[in-house]
Image (tube, rainbow, N blue to C red; front, side, top):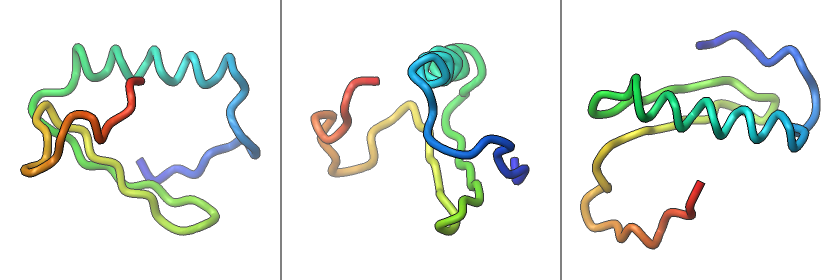
Length: 66
């Protein structure tokens, strides 16, 4: 997943809704226990972690609903 985005600028409302729906589907049907991803941006790398468990010592309130 190192392919740079082909579009410039922020997501439209439609794109964000599609992203959210696809991410929910991925988490429901593809995510086993965890996944760590990295992607390059114009501002440097971004690291993304998905997990079915909260990090130790972290309250669920630290996360906003998606």
